[in-house]
Amino acid sequence: MTLSTMRFEFNPVHKILLARFEGRIADESLAESYATNQKYAIATDASVNIADYSSVTEIGVSTAFIRHLANRAPVLAEPTRPRFIVVPTSVGLGLARMFQILGEPTRPLLQVVHTLDEALAALGIQAPHFEPLVVPTPCPSHTVAQEVRKILLGVAVALLPSRGFRVPTQFFPQFDNRCLEA
Image (cartoon, rainbow, N blue to C red; front, side, top):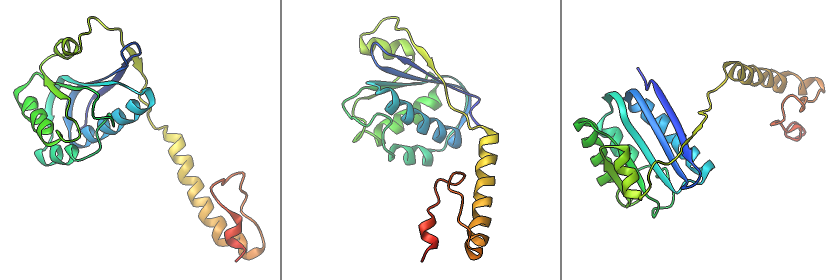
């Protein structure tokens, strides 16, 4: 079972990236959300990152994964940018504190708080307006099309050059026919 919902919102005035999580969270879903959070932080050039786990109903995250995650590159690359983990439960609080302690060298301004209001108060911001960001989901037909292209490219590479044909690069732009000319 993975995370049921992951929403991202952005406040363009204060450049705050807010990630909200709901449902059950496990190692896999936390890894996915961390990577997505990093992408949005780069895309929005966020100055602040808030990860809000107050709507998480079940935590299935291992301490080994928390250690692994703490050793990864931070969501906000710049260590002087503030970041918050909002977690109201004792289990979540323990894991968040562990992440905070282990990640302190690269996340010196990370704070663990109980509520979103606490995080906003620490920033000195009242009632900010957040705009939703769309989480990209892979299109199944696009994935199938990619797999079909890989198969066709394999067939083309195996058969066409031996018969004097060239690979049609308009369909396979990543292929360079010059590699067949050796």
